[in-house]
Image (cartoon, rainbow, N blue to C red):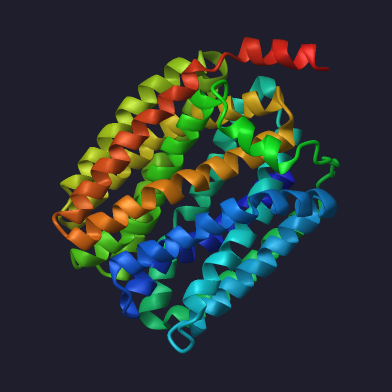
Length: 383
């Protein structure tokens, strides 16, 4: 687990420097918000189309090599963003490159975590993972904003690329377990759409849509209300500092109490975080709302994520991880056109979009309809 934490921390530090600014970068080089949303629609579309074949590639390569391949695709993405203003056709290629990166990394990382985490302490281990991510994001967004201000996006991409390469090194020391593909493409999608899987699918859809709206639109919204790039980074960094103090206690509570009650409580708190974003209109209100949303998000995410991994440990690990990622992106493909239409109509588009995210955040609670005892019994019956 220590190697996983270190690799995850380094990668999140690098991504923390650039991810929040990519939508802002697209906006500043002249793309309208509907076109930026279309750019981020192409990514999940490519993932849904090629997700099964990506799983087969990960099974053949193994976790370590797959994560290395994902970093190579991330390098290509950063280089492509640099030359996007010159070669406009990269706008349509970069989402495919990003989708390939996501396939190789997301499948491998989640599979690795399921294999190496301990069911009795999974809440603490998930909170440890979240803490590593938060530590990495304490200064990285602010640092990224400063680099953009004084040196530009190109230097930021170079620094991030160096850190991403360093993040692969700890994984050399992680013991790898093979995971054969025991499912076909038809069985994969039929299982995703089955009634038995519906509570998990709805909960995953809730996460996927609200996270997508937050990732793409929140930094653009801050830019539109005339907050500078270094201020956007400061908001993210200061909110992360406040959130870090909550994580340790949430992880301990998650291992001792019923995760489903914590998911229900956290969902309600998190819902109001999205409602608050509707009314943010200055640096201070954005900082307050983002801090509240991040804290409530951790209160929800730690038990939700650990419960997800509990379910995965009682099923075919690999199939569950692949289904999870495809549900994420299928949900985004379905909802993204609605968000694009909202911005084309252009009537309070941010408020409507954040309201859509708030409604979808309530779907986290759907996971509570999944019975872990039944999952365990099913696994026992099927060996």
